[in-house]
Image (cartoon, rainbow, N blue to C red; front, side, top):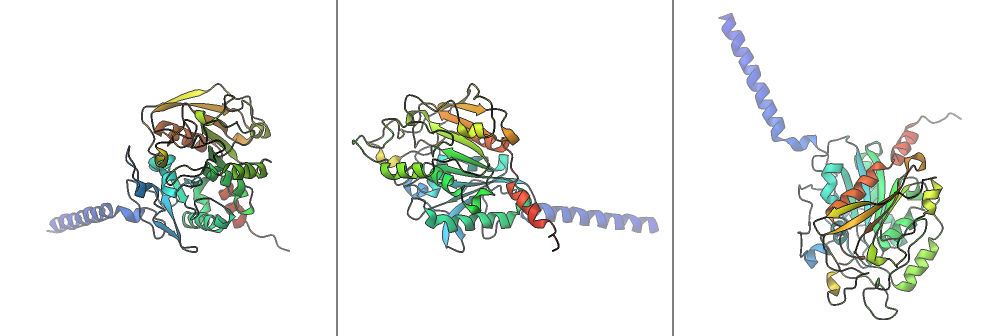
Length: 372
């Protein structure tokens, strides 16, 4: 009798354990991290299809509200992100005349957020041209991500900017708020530290003499020629901050000289001479292009998306492990969306660079205060 009761008790315990396991497995969301007031879907919100991305999709400004300014933005992150898991944080800025969702699909790193554990914030300027009037909004987004996920869990923080978004990255990385936070900057046709290449004759979106590369609704956008030159001149001196730098551009955006073989930014970190290029070949096209100028498309400004090749030039042996590189997409212009393999190669370059600025800040703030 006692033996039977013992077996019954063991059976009850086993059934309870199985039931509990089933309950845990039925509620996997409890294990995962969620940013406050956000949702997470396996397929990123408003992702463009492989072709013919609609206008209402690319002009969308995001589904996450920045609570202090009440402006919206996109926030992409792995839905299976564990609490306390280490991630790389990316702030991605669109070009003048463009929108956040065009930027997300122009440089579609959201496709790799799960594989490489990325948290990507993609904001919008209401004027579609970034200025210091937007800085508070950008600060609030960055602070929200850092506070929610924790400084200690952010391995590296990168700025990414296309066209005027790249020039804005160059401006803000010099500011007090960003200079001690940013580990790297990826410029997508947004200016090159260490020596800019020349522009091709077809960089402007129209063939009208003296026409400015004005931004396009849903397009990549540039800035008017005079404004572009003035902004470039103001940022000619290199930033004082320390960070890795990757420059990406379309071959057709450049004059016949191409990207300079040397880089003052590489010299800053005592990098070796630029290596011979590695080639990346994409069988698939990017998602977006400047769909507003179908009758005015020019090679330097950008044609329709298509498969292609890219060359990756790296400056080796940089001090402190910094990454300095140039990536040239062959036979591409300013507004064709990046193809999948070159996008992934840029991510790999970013992740190969050292990070830790935010973690160092966390350790510093956590250190005991010296008694006076």
